[in-house]
Image (tube, helix red, strand yellow):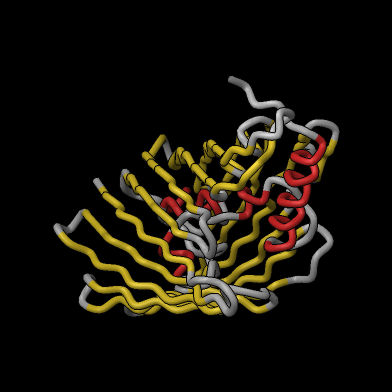
Length: 295
Protein backbone atom coordinates (compact mmCIF):
# COMPACT_ATOMS: atom_id res chain seq x y z
CA UNK A 1 0.00 0.00 0.00
CA UNK A 2 1.07 3.56 -0.67
CA UNK A 3 2.34 5.13 2.55
CA UNK A 4 0.82 8.42 3.63
CA UNK A 5 3.37 11.04 4.64
CA UNK A 6 2.53 13.08 7.72
CA UNK A 7 3.69 16.63 8.38
CA UNK A 8 6.37 15.22 10.64
CA UNK A 9 7.51 12.88 7.91
CA UNK A 10 7.76 15.72 5.40
CA UNK A 11 9.90 17.65 7.88
CA UNK A 12 12.16 14.60 8.17
CA UNK A 13 12.42 14.45 4.38
CA UNK A 14 13.32 18.12 4.08
CA UNK A 15 15.80 17.83 6.94
CA UNK A 16 17.43 14.82 5.28
CA UNK A 17 17.60 16.71 2.00
CA UNK A 18 19.28 19.61 3.79
CA UNK A 19 21.86 17.26 5.27
CA UNK A 20 22.58 15.78 1.84
CA UNK A 21 23.08 19.28 0.44
CA UNK A 22 25.43 20.10 3.29
CA UNK A 23 27.63 17.13 2.38
CA UNK A 24 27.85 18.41 -1.19
CA UNK A 25 28.83 21.86 -2.37
CA UNK A 26 26.16 24.55 -2.10
CA UNK A 27 22.41 24.12 -1.82
CA UNK A 28 21.66 22.52 -5.18
CA UNK A 29 19.30 19.61 -5.62
CA UNK A 30 20.02 16.46 -7.55
CA UNK A 31 23.45 16.03 -6.02
CA UNK A 32 23.77 12.61 -7.62
CA UNK A 33 24.57 14.63 -10.76
CA UNK A 34 27.88 15.58 -9.14
CA UNK A 35 29.00 11.96 -8.80
CA UNK A 36 31.58 10.55 -11.20
CA UNK A 37 31.18 6.76 -11.05
CA UNK A 38 34.58 5.91 -12.56
CA UNK A 39 37.20 4.31 -10.31
CA UNK A 40 40.14 5.47 -12.41
CA UNK A 41 39.05 9.11 -12.25
CA UNK A 42 38.19 8.91 -8.56
CA UNK A 43 41.62 7.47 -7.74
CA UNK A 44 43.16 10.49 -9.49
CA UNK A 45 41.22 13.00 -7.39
CA UNK A 46 38.71 13.53 -10.23
CA UNK A 47 41.25 15.65 -12.14
CA UNK A 48 39.79 14.21 -15.33
CA UNK A 49 38.47 17.06 -17.49
CA UNK A 50 41.39 16.84 -19.93
CA UNK A 51 41.82 13.03 -19.91
CA UNK A 52 39.91 11.35 -22.71
CA UNK A 53 39.64 8.05 -24.48
CA UNK A 54 37.50 6.16 -21.95
CA UNK A 55 34.00 5.87 -20.52
CA UNK A 56 34.91 8.15 -17.59
CA UNK A 57 34.64 11.10 -19.97
CA UNK A 58 30.84 10.83 -19.81
CA UNK A 59 30.94 12.14 -16.24
CA UNK A 60 33.64 14.82 -16.59
CA UNK A 61 33.87 16.00 -20.20
CA UNK A 62 31.92 14.28 -23.01
CA UNK A 63 34.41 15.57 -25.57
CA UNK A 64 36.85 12.93 -24.30
CA UNK A 65 34.69 10.27 -25.97
CA UNK A 66 35.92 11.66 -29.29
CA UNK A 67 39.30 10.06 -28.58
CA UNK A 68 37.89 6.63 -27.68
CA UNK A 69 39.13 4.03 -30.19
CA UNK A 70 37.61 0.77 -28.87
CA UNK A 71 34.26 -0.54 -27.68
CA UNK A 72 34.12 -0.53 -23.90
CA UNK A 73 31.84 -1.68 -21.07
CA UNK A 74 32.20 -1.08 -17.36
CA UNK A 75 30.45 -1.90 -14.09
CA UNK A 76 31.12 -0.06 -10.81
CA UNK A 77 30.08 -0.35 -7.19
CA UNK A 78 30.72 2.21 -4.47
CA UNK A 79 30.28 1.91 -0.73
CA UNK A 80 29.97 5.39 0.76
CA UNK A 81 30.77 7.11 4.03
CA UNK A 82 27.49 6.09 5.71
CA UNK A 83 24.96 3.50 4.51
CA UNK A 84 24.73 4.98 1.04
CA UNK A 85 25.88 3.06 -2.02
CA UNK A 86 26.19 3.61 -5.76
CA UNK A 87 26.16 1.26 -8.72
CA UNK A 88 26.78 2.07 -12.38
CA UNK A 89 26.80 0.29 -15.73
CA UNK A 90 28.42 2.08 -18.68
CA UNK A 91 28.97 1.09 -22.30
CA UNK A 92 30.49 2.85 -25.28
CA UNK A 93 30.89 2.15 -28.99
CA UNK A 94 32.63 3.97 -31.80
CA UNK A 95 30.12 5.62 -34.11
CA UNK A 96 31.22 7.32 -37.30
CA UNK A 97 34.15 9.58 -36.46
CA UNK A 98 33.30 9.68 -32.76
CA UNK A 99 31.89 7.49 -30.01
CA UNK A 100 28.62 7.14 -28.09
CA UNK A 101 28.46 6.39 -24.38
CA UNK A 102 25.46 5.13 -22.42
CA UNK A 103 25.41 5.06 -18.63
CA UNK A 104 22.95 3.98 -15.95
CA UNK A 105 23.64 5.01 -12.36
CA UNK A 106 21.78 3.82 -9.27
CA UNK A 107 22.12 5.55 -5.89
CA UNK A 108 20.56 4.77 -2.51
CA UNK A 109 21.10 6.84 0.61
CA UNK A 110 20.22 4.10 3.10
CA UNK A 111 17.24 3.57 5.39
CA UNK A 112 15.43 5.90 7.78
CA UNK A 113 12.41 5.42 10.07
CA UNK A 114 9.10 7.20 9.39
CA UNK A 115 5.74 7.38 11.21
CA UNK A 116 2.47 7.26 9.26
CA UNK A 117 -0.87 8.87 10.14
CA UNK A 118 -1.80 5.93 12.37
CA UNK A 119 1.35 6.36 14.42
CA UNK A 120 2.93 3.20 13.02
CA UNK A 121 6.63 3.41 12.31
CA UNK A 122 8.23 1.87 9.23
CA UNK A 123 11.68 1.73 7.71
CA UNK A 124 12.01 3.08 4.17
CA UNK A 125 14.77 4.04 1.77
CA UNK A 126 15.64 7.66 2.46
CA UNK A 127 16.47 8.41 -1.16
CA UNK A 128 16.70 6.37 -4.34
CA UNK A 129 18.00 7.88 -7.59
CA UNK A 130 18.28 6.60 -11.13
CA UNK A 131 20.34 8.54 -13.66
CA UNK A 132 20.50 7.80 -17.38
CA UNK A 133 23.34 9.43 -19.33
CA UNK A 134 23.71 9.42 -23.13
CA UNK A 135 26.84 11.18 -24.40
CA UNK A 136 28.57 11.66 -27.74
CA UNK A 137 32.08 12.87 -28.51
CA UNK A 138 33.36 13.73 -31.98
CA UNK A 139 36.88 14.71 -33.09
CA UNK A 140 37.02 17.77 -35.34
CA UNK A 141 40.68 17.02 -36.06
CA UNK A 142 43.49 14.96 -34.56
CA UNK A 143 43.87 17.58 -31.86
CA UNK A 144 40.35 18.89 -31.13
CA UNK A 145 37.16 17.11 -30.05
CA UNK A 146 33.75 18.32 -28.94
CA UNK A 147 31.03 16.50 -27.04
CA UNK A 148 27.58 16.68 -25.53
CA UNK A 149 25.59 14.61 -23.08
CA UNK A 150 21.92 14.36 -22.12
CA UNK A 151 20.82 13.18 -18.67
CA UNK A 152 17.53 12.12 -17.12
CA UNK A 153 17.33 11.91 -13.32
CA UNK A 154 14.48 10.20 -11.45
CA UNK A 155 14.70 10.73 -7.71
CA UNK A 156 12.43 9.37 -4.97
CA UNK A 157 12.47 10.38 -1.30
CA UNK A 158 11.15 8.05 1.43
CA UNK A 159 9.63 5.81 -1.26
CA UNK A 160 6.81 8.33 -1.79
CA UNK A 161 7.88 11.76 -3.07
CA UNK A 162 9.39 11.72 -6.56
CA UNK A 163 10.83 14.22 -9.01
CA UNK A 164 12.29 14.13 -12.51
CA UNK A 165 14.94 16.44 -13.93
CA UNK A 166 16.67 16.80 -17.29
CA UNK A 167 20.18 18.13 -17.85
CA UNK A 168 22.69 18.76 -20.62
CA UNK A 169 26.51 18.60 -20.64
CA UNK A 170 28.79 20.32 -23.18
CA UNK A 171 32.53 19.98 -23.55
CA UNK A 172 35.61 20.55 -25.69
CA UNK A 173 39.13 19.09 -25.55
CA UNK A 174 42.43 20.07 -27.22
CA UNK A 175 45.51 17.88 -27.54
CA UNK A 176 48.93 19.39 -28.26
CA UNK A 177 51.57 16.64 -28.31
CA UNK A 178 51.82 15.38 -24.70
CA UNK A 179 49.58 18.10 -23.21
CA UNK A 180 45.78 18.26 -23.30
CA UNK A 181 43.31 20.94 -22.25
CA UNK A 182 39.63 20.49 -21.51
CA UNK A 183 36.60 22.60 -20.68
CA UNK A 184 33.10 21.39 -19.81
CA UNK A 185 29.80 22.76 -18.52
CA UNK A 186 27.65 20.18 -16.76
CA UNK A 187 24.03 19.92 -15.64
CA UNK A 188 22.50 22.70 -17.69
CA UNK A 189 18.82 22.35 -16.88
CA UNK A 190 15.77 23.36 -14.90
CA UNK A 191 15.06 22.84 -11.19
CA UNK A 192 14.35 19.51 -9.58
CA UNK A 193 11.07 19.82 -7.68
CA UNK A 194 9.73 17.68 -4.82
CA UNK A 195 6.10 18.51 -3.92
CA UNK A 196 6.23 22.35 -3.92
CA UNK A 197 9.94 22.69 -3.15
CA UNK A 198 12.38 23.16 -6.04
CA UNK A 199 16.17 23.40 -6.12
CA UNK A 200 18.49 24.35 -8.94
CA UNK A 201 20.55 21.57 -10.45
CA UNK A 202 24.26 21.63 -9.55
CA UNK A 203 25.59 23.63 -12.51
CA UNK A 204 29.29 22.83 -12.82
CA UNK A 205 32.07 24.37 -14.92
CA UNK A 206 35.30 22.41 -15.28
CA UNK A 207 38.64 23.60 -16.68
CA UNK A 208 41.51 21.13 -16.81
CA UNK A 209 44.90 20.22 -18.23
CA UNK A 210 46.79 16.93 -18.41
CA UNK A 211 50.26 15.69 -19.31
CA UNK A 212 51.04 12.18 -20.56
CA UNK A 213 54.55 10.74 -21.02
CA UNK A 214 56.05 7.22 -20.73
CA UNK A 215 53.36 5.72 -18.53
CA UNK A 216 52.88 8.85 -16.40
CA UNK A 217 49.64 10.84 -16.54
CA UNK A 218 49.15 14.02 -14.51
CA UNK A 219 45.89 15.95 -14.37
CA UNK A 220 44.96 19.34 -12.91
CA UNK A 221 41.39 20.68 -12.72
CA UNK A 222 39.64 23.80 -11.48
CA UNK A 223 35.94 23.23 -10.75
CA UNK A 224 33.25 25.85 -10.10
CA UNK A 225 29.78 24.78 -8.90
CA UNK A 226 26.93 27.30 -8.77
CA UNK A 227 27.75 30.04 -6.23
CA UNK A 228 30.48 28.09 -4.43
CA UNK A 229 34.19 28.69 -4.31
CA UNK A 230 36.46 27.18 -6.94
CA UNK A 231 37.91 23.80 -5.96
CA UNK A 232 41.24 22.48 -7.23
CA UNK A 233 41.92 18.85 -8.18
CA UNK A 234 45.32 17.28 -8.76
CA UNK A 235 45.86 13.66 -9.73
CA UNK A 236 48.45 11.30 -11.16
CA UNK A 237 48.67 7.81 -12.58
CA UNK A 238 51.77 5.74 -13.25
CA UNK A 239 51.53 2.54 -15.29
CA UNK A 240 54.04 -0.26 -14.71
CA UNK A 241 54.64 -2.74 -17.57
CA UNK A 242 51.23 -1.86 -19.04
CA UNK A 243 49.64 -4.03 -16.34
CA UNK A 244 49.63 -2.19 -13.01
CA UNK A 245 48.45 1.40 -12.50
CA UNK A 246 49.21 3.35 -9.33
CA UNK A 247 47.08 6.44 -8.69
CA UNK A 248 46.80 9.27 -6.19
CA UNK A 249 44.91 12.54 -6.02
CA UNK A 250 44.14 15.57 -3.90
CA UNK A 251 41.00 17.74 -3.90
CA UNK A 252 41.43 21.17 -2.30
CA UNK A 253 38.39 22.92 -0.86
CA UNK A 254 36.50 19.83 0.37
CA UNK A 255 35.60 19.08 3.98
CA UNK A 256 35.99 15.32 3.47
CA UNK A 257 37.54 12.97 0.96
CA UNK A 258 40.37 15.32 -0.04
CA UNK A 259 42.95 12.57 -0.48
CA UNK A 260 42.30 9.69 -2.88
CA UNK A 261 44.27 6.57 -3.75
CA UNK A 262 43.78 4.09 -6.55
CA UNK A 263 45.02 0.90 -8.15
CA UNK A 264 44.45 -0.60 -11.59
CA UNK A 265 45.20 -4.16 -12.72
CA UNK A 266 44.99 -5.17 -16.38
CA UNK A 267 44.62 -8.84 -17.26
CA UNK A 268 43.65 -10.94 -20.30
CA UNK A 269 44.66 -7.90 -22.42
CA UNK A 270 41.07 -6.66 -22.65
CA UNK A 271 40.00 -6.59 -18.98
CA UNK A 272 40.91 -4.16 -16.22
CA UNK A 273 40.04 -4.02 -12.53
CA UNK A 274 40.17 -0.59 -10.87
CA UNK A 275 39.92 0.30 -7.20
CA UNK A 276 39.81 3.72 -5.55
CA UNK A 277 39.52 4.92 -1.98
CA UNK A 278 38.65 8.39 -0.68
CA UNK A 279 40.08 9.04 2.79
CA UNK A 280 37.47 10.62 5.07
CA UNK A 281 38.34 12.59 8.21
CA UNK A 282 35.17 12.02 10.24
CA UNK A 283 33.41 9.25 8.32
CA UNK A 284 34.20 5.80 7.03
CA UNK A 285 36.39 5.82 3.95
CA UNK A 286 34.57 5.57 0.62
CA UNK A 287 35.50 2.58 -1.55
CA UNK A 288 35.02 2.19 -5.31
CA UNK A 289 35.59 -0.91 -7.44
CA UNK A 290 35.01 -1.33 -11.17
CA UNK A 291 35.62 -3.83 -13.95
CA UNK A 292 36.16 -2.61 -17.51
CA UNK A 293 36.18 -4.61 -20.76
CA UNK A 294 37.65 -3.36 -24.04
CA UNK A 295 36.77 -5.03 -27.33
